Amino acid sequence: MMFNMLRVLNLKKYFGGVKAVDNCSFSVSRNSITALIGPNGAGKTTAFNLISGLLKSDSGEIQLSDHDISRIGAHKRALRGISRTFQQVRLFSNLTVEENLLLSLNGEDGDFFKLFKKESDHTKAINSVLEAVGLHDLPQNKRGAELSYGQTKLVGLARALLMPHKILMLDEPVAGVNPVLRERLKNIILELKANGETVLLIEHDMDFVMSVADNIIVMAEGKVLANGSPSEIKQNQQVLDAYLGKEVQTA
Image 1 (cartoon, helix red, strand yellow):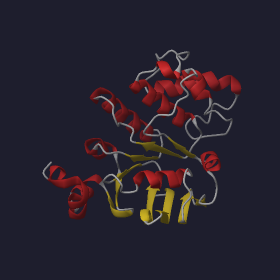
Image 2 (spheres, rainbow, N blue to C red):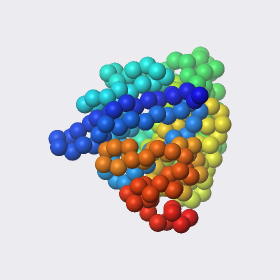
Image 3 (tube, rainbow, N blue to C red):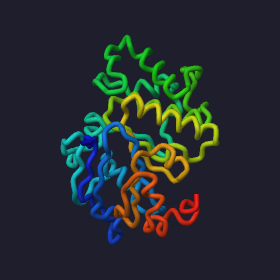
């Protein structure tokens, strides 16, 4: 029996008459990679923002490690173990790489860098996370504004990893990246899972999703349309009709 790191139960969020998330339920197993996919306007980003606390749900429940976090703010959810990235990477452009990463070190124990508890170990933690995302050669005194788009993506991922967490939420990790960086990110995410991470991601690149995900949740019109393994999703006629189309069906 697999342990659910995250459970979303009957989640709802309406904007006026628009049902952005409509009675949505799904779970994310520990030490797995789960992808949330669907057409534009399906409710994926709204669901992400509801889980991380950037939006308040109208009703429903969100459980992290069997603890109800539905009624606490985004800051407290982060302290409970939710760490996320954004499609548009939000680094502080006037701070150095090191300073951007130091913001994630709050002295709390975490799954990824639980050994680095003392201030004297911050340098070791930063070096380790940069190595994990393949940026060990990046000068740490380089400012956010001086980074390339790809470097910004990787530093954003490093910052999310450095934040003590139980689940890592990635919002379109390969959006806008070149094929080389796309492959690099795929290998990084698979390595994270091999090291015990639990990942929930939104992504439109279906080749990428099919190559990394253990489980795929398909949303459409605010609801969960289907939930299953990549092979099951590829063969689901509802999903093919609503989103994936004939390309996946014949792949």
